Length: 101
Image (cartoon, rainbow, N blue to C red; front, side):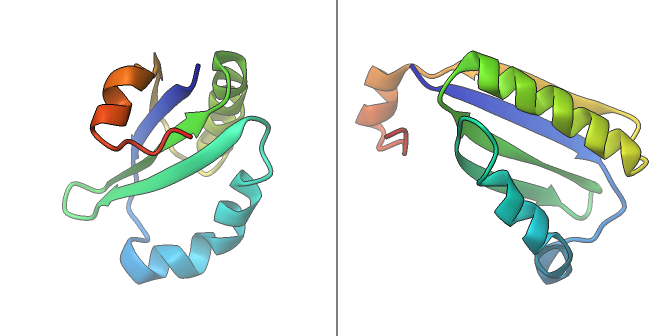
């Protein structure tokens, strides 16, 4: 079974190409985290929000990452981090071509 981690938080930026330039090394390091299959980066520059949707191999690895990532973000001065972990319904997700494999 796969697990989705949904994370969002308020931040002043950077966004768009500036975010790519400043966070490329961080993005690469996420590939080395235990249980990570993929991440989709999310941003809304008007609302000053960012985050991500992650797919993990296990609930335990998603929870471990959320704990570590929350601490890292708080170290960057981000006060509130919203994180939720969901089980993936693989049967229905496959019908809608979700990238879970």
